[in-house]
Length: 485
Ligand code: NAD
Image (cartoon, rainbow, N blue to C red; front, side):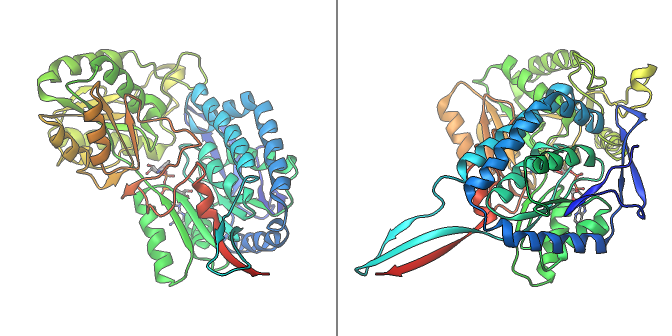
């Protein structure tokens, strides 16, 4: 039976709801699962269940919650191969990239399990005698978690784990196209002993399920990752309600990699190809602009094209594949649309630019060639807008100051990279680029779970960070208690 259920307190396969299909983007003949389209009322009911569960869960001891997280880590680790395969079948990324997500989820579980049994407050010396002042951290209540499809396991995990570790309850809406792997994460938590109602999973249209999560006044905080457009919409809706609720918005990117004249061109090409075409360019951390010194342009471009020719595109389940399909028809059409825009606005298409068809492997999937545009200028749409696919814009610059200006010229501010052997140059770059993460001689993709993460400008509302110890700040509030004796 392909029908899957949701967690509304407990696991339910609703009988009287419409179901929608999830198909493998590498081979759309293959049905992965069917999920129910829940309604606004269903979502409202689930929020009430989470609110009720909060009463008990918020009073559990950190050590009791940590035990469940450790157990969930063990369960997920023991299923790593099956989960990675399922993730690839649903989202399309390569098996190695899916495995990376599974392992990162295990690491996040263990990291937060260790963290919450540590100190969570301070003792502050008082100006009065016989007085102790201490601060404690308390959970907020019901957290709405709304996530995209491109990291369908580890990204929700880096929100859900610190949320429930600190005593909150969660209602999670995964992206419509990746609920199957989401369900596996929730299952693992319950098998590890999580009490009913603490983590809930709701599937269905964003206009009903997503909207209710954003506007329901019983929700105490909203953590969202997705596009700038949706982030703005959510921010505006909550603002109009004049309601005091925490919102964490992590949005898109238009990340640049800069090769300095003092940098290793081969390293720059290698890391750029991995960051631009790995994950089929569908990473918020992907490199989509490659800035090259004007007088190195010809040499670097030919190296870049030669290296890109070696990128193996195909079904992510197949050994040796570097780049899978785009994750959906919508993504496929959007990326091909941007390739047309690039051609029409005068950028020079020097590699790729086409869908891949032919044979059993390609005819039923959303495959596009890795694509390189040269002679891209900062005013072009393909240099400014997030394409979220395997399309790289090559741009040139004369001085480091000019390169920094170009890096900062889009409305986004997520990640920027530089390839250089000059430490002063690296430091100057890091100080002046307006982003949340800087990489020096490293790919723009790839984040470590113990490091705080988040974008600035249009890449996020930049009030709270995700991951690292800092994630705890979003999910807890501080109380100060004065005790006289
Ligand atoms: P999206 O904004 O379309 O959707 C994200 C989630 O929000 C989905 O679950 C969707 O169903 C839901 N949603 C859509 N409209 C909504 C509404 N009006 N109210 C409530 N919920 C709504 O984004 P996407 O296409 O799923 O993901 C791609 C985007 O995510 C890209 O822009 C990418 O850069 C961004 N992203 C950012 C990060 C980061 O950490 N900054 C990480 C991954 C992806």
